[in-house]
Amino acid sequence: MSDIHSASGTPESVAQPGASDLIKDATTQTFAVDVLDASQQAPVIVDFWAPWCGPCKQLTPMLEKVVQQAQGAVRLVKMNIDEHPEVAQQLRVQSIPAVFAFKNGQPVDGFMGALPESQIKRFVETLLGGELAPTQAEQMLEAGAAAIEAGDIGAAAQAFAAVLQEDRENPKAIAGLARCYIESNDLERATEVLGLAEGKLADEPDIKGAIAALEIAKSGPQEADGDLAPLLAKVDANPADHEARIELAIALNAGGDREAATDHLVESIRRDRAWNDEAARSQLLQFFEAWGQMDEATQAGRRKLSSVLFS
Image (cartoon, rainbow, N blue to C red):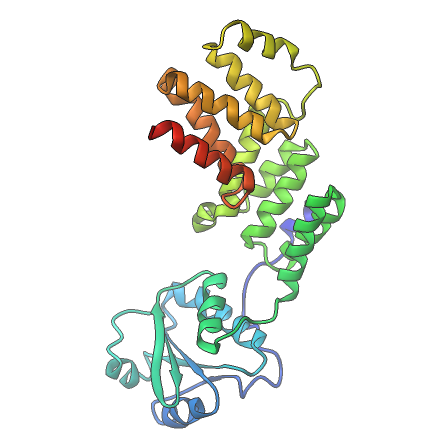
């Protein structure tokens, strides 16, 4: 894990040499040329910031990164409102960071506050009317996800760790590497990796899903032992044995049978939803979180759950 913890993850300017035409600082005097005139040729994003603004320090490097990724299709102009407040006042900027996009000399879109890089990318894609080419990090994340799907946990871990060496706050990479350790039954290292997700990162869907998967792994068997007969016998003998049903569902999930795991929990909910503070429903929702909201088993399970709750 030392390679992960040594990753700087401290974003400074990502503008590369020769990028002065794409990313520049503007003044009140140069605004007409740098923004209004320039936006006749390509969209121009204006970033209003100030040295004392913490969120600005988070947003600006990500704006620069996405603009660089667009390879000349869009430009970025930064304006320090402490030194040059006039334009911000004319645009009625109430707080910073504030971002405006200009086309053909007119503001056409914008947002306020620091956004995640994924949302900034979507903002630029909307402005340009098309998707940006995937970054190297995005390609590595896709490779990692494909490797997990193929069962090559080692290759997946290498891909996710490579992304974290460049960006230790990438939620998909954190979650992906944690899942690799969960699959390898190294729950201690999975916990360590998820410790990188602090603050707002903890609310990212990928992180929440990995945390749910870790909790499931800690609370139940890491893999099915092949002998479910005792639990099946308990459930057959007493269909209202909710504790046995939940244990069986956890074991089935560990063995990869998500459909059967869902069915047993839904049956428990149908029989007595309130049992043990809605334990079956809580377990099922934790499964959904761990599997991912777009997973087929999650979507099918939600339909089954709804049919019971609203019947």
